[in-house]
Length: 289
Image (cartoon, rainbow, N blue to C red):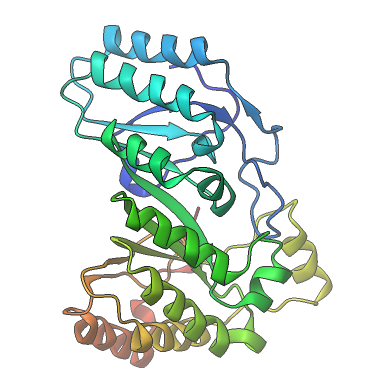
């Protein structure tokens, strides 16, 4: 496949055909993120996108899943997205699902009719970053949206019959906002009740504002016990029946997997065990993004 710059995907898209329909991230100012810093956001020419799918059809015997990259495919014009999805359906009748990242801003510009049409044409799920339910954290990290707006856009996606996967980041508020970050993030998840909840643990990337803040001492990272404390607070307050909870990213110290609310107590017991034996945690040198 033809790719421009670094390409990122959710862990669950490891075996998907990945085609860039945009380049970079339309926001690209989050203080903790270095993902798309090397390229300016742009809409990829439609014919190039369609040609990539034709190349893939000639190359692969079977394509079961497709992920539309880069950071915000939904900003494309609706009719162009329809053409892309129609092409996928025509070329890959065996394809079981198509997914993409989506930002609160790109969801806002889509009408509910457009979202339903995208769903009907095969866009089955979008991944959206909440990062935190605490507005003070979101402001400092330059997310560009407050919690209420992110929740509203998540609810809009759900209302239109599309599956929703939402991620947040443990440690993003530092020690001073640990409690609020945990509790208000849980409240935001509860309000959206997404199909999937994903938790990462903060890692500091060079060439980000967060890196500079940590270096000059204006932002403190959580210790491992504090990460567990925050995770416990979050889990205790989660009430999102049916949501599949995953805390199994390479950045996480502790692996938690289950379905809410039925597996909540079991996951709390796993946190208990880790609090009593920190050797259960992933070593720092094994963590990654």
